[in-house]
Length: 304
Ligand code: M3P
Ligand code: FE
Image (cartoon, rainbow, N blue to C red; front, top):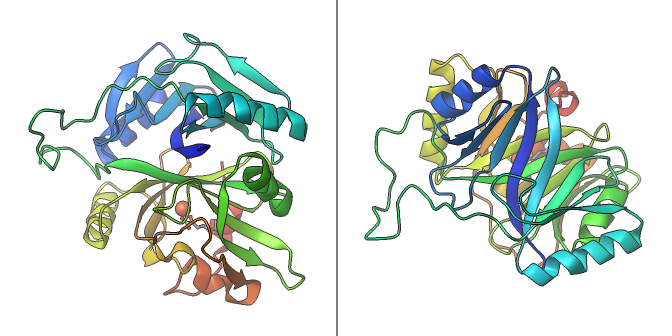
């Protein structure tokens, strides 16, 4: 019950053609729809209409991020909870957004616009439903991840923002980073039990997007992704490497407009009553990048 997973991220780009070319040819997503000012994209194993919407706007940024809830009733229960916490909500009616029905929108304490939806148009993955091949066509261009995995937003007050996601939206904390005074610098939150995070919140400016991540099935695919990125001249931020936090294997890199992307694999299963993992600030270098043991200023300071 409650939050199921990340459904889509909606961003702005001043160059829709360039962004669309990068996300289709280098990232290897499927373009599913295009209007005058928007491009909709998805990964090959995603059933939903899209997982990324890019809208033309002179300034790069994030419009909103959307989580899917497990049951239709969850939508209205969470709407009440968000309202009684003190965040005004609005309903986006069926037909107002491409690929989904009614949704609830509100501003989270750290200033990003979040949306909850249950009713999503299921257009199916690339494999089909009759005697499907277990793999996509071998000639897909680019990295071609099977699905979007998680995202990370910044917050000036991490603890306040984390409390909202936990107490109001019902997500569970799996890992946290504490400073010397015991204040949260970062939290990792899950809505499911099969991975350590669907969203993470790390100290930084309110309203900012740090990155979203695509899932890859194993470390060898991370290596291949690094080859694809280097071949295409994409600016790599960090990696290929491993996180201490989540234990995930990762590469961070920038899309042509400077939005940070990640490819990620690994993690672990986590029951609702599994004890949370705590990192102390003096070990955060290893938490962030286990092999390098660095807290890169570019990594912490650059966001969208
Ligand atoms: C991840 C992850 C920061 C940590 C990021 C970690 C921004 O992206 O997937 O675990 O400090
Ligand atoms: Fe990440």
